[in-house]
Length: 177
Image (cartoon, rainbow, N blue to C red; front, side, top):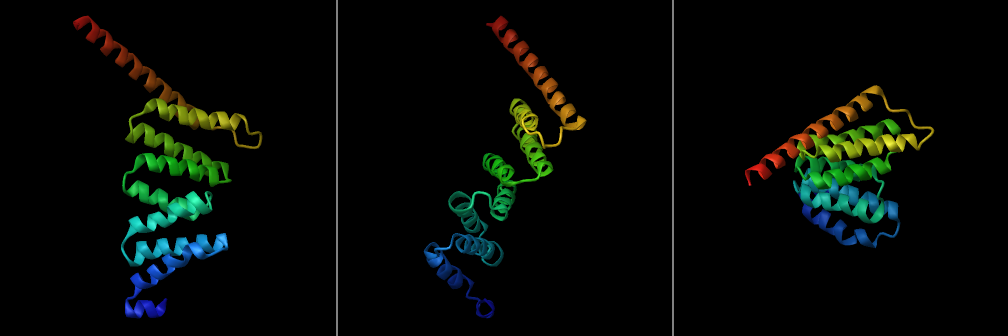
């Protein structure tokens, strides 16, 4: 690698590794090679799109709970405002996590995307309710805090107001017809 840096042969080095990565029999070694290739594309070759494809291969084909690849994809999708992909990878991240507080944070992030960026308050409520329902089914999980309950109630109230406003608009439109 040092010789490649001195001679600026990164493209050739990366291409050689890419040709051989699928021939690596050990899955963990193949995962690590994809992660290194992704980093090289991002940091040395200034090609984050191609690096993202290596992270995608890790989570799609080799190790769906690889947090390094998941977090890199999360950053990529967030930076490129690919919200549907971001939501999907956040769900995958939640699946990979073991800490309930971290899982709660991920659910809050997903609900926030639905509420603030996609203006889908109903789906935001559904996500928070899904989290609360999961907590009810887990004896060892921490109980939701008052802030969680207040947030879910506030979202439900806001959704009710939007439904009432929409119903009023529909009624007005029908009266005008």
